[in-house]
Image 1 (cartoon, rainbow, N blue to C red):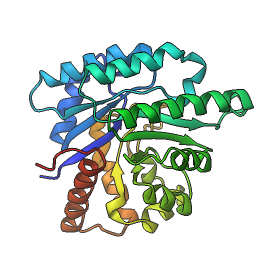
Image 2 (image 1 turned 180 degrees about the vertical axis):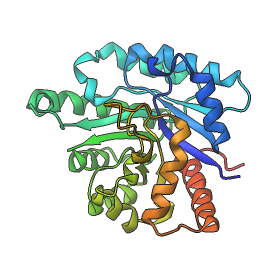
Image 3 (image 1 turned 60 degrees about the horizontal axis):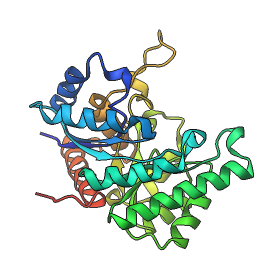
Image 4 (image 1 turned 120 degrees about the vertical axis):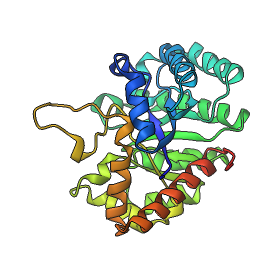
Length: 277
């Protein structure tokens, strides 16, 4: 059976409270053997841990891993104390990475010098924590790829990680790979109009890619319902991301897709510093 690793989920959020166990079982049945629970706000850390513990008590569900962090999009909500809380969480719990962290200048309100400086301060502080705890990082980057690369270089960051939901160009993707990062591929790969992402996955090695749902967002095109303005994404949709990537790479035979899935699984373990056993 194909093994899949969902390297980016928000499976702890309220949208999954009514049917989390059922969805976890569905994901496992579809081949999702592991998933990461990603942090974004300090006041969500307790929910992150509770979901991790809940999944840990169940059978026939994906194995979950923790990755707490302070997301740049919510920069106005973060406080200095939250960095201390993050450090304490990393001390007290077994975490696989720090995330999601980075820079986001997609919206106008985040383009001001003050906000950009604040995002940079929180990003660099969390890179320091990742270095302190010898952890990779899960990067959130929108309209800021060059700046993120510059900061990683300035920090001599050596622990790698994943450039989540990659939206940059080919040369930027190659620069992240050179810096020790895997390229995170979401359900956006199923969109034939996502030509930039298709160019990226064809331009880097298969060894440089990992899969993610980013649920409840980034729903694969084939799973979106035309009757809804926004269809909830779930970890069970990860096989559709694999299908989209296989099609983009022209690896449509079953044995080719199985080999691709096996490589993506190994890539996930490698970049997260997990045992391959």
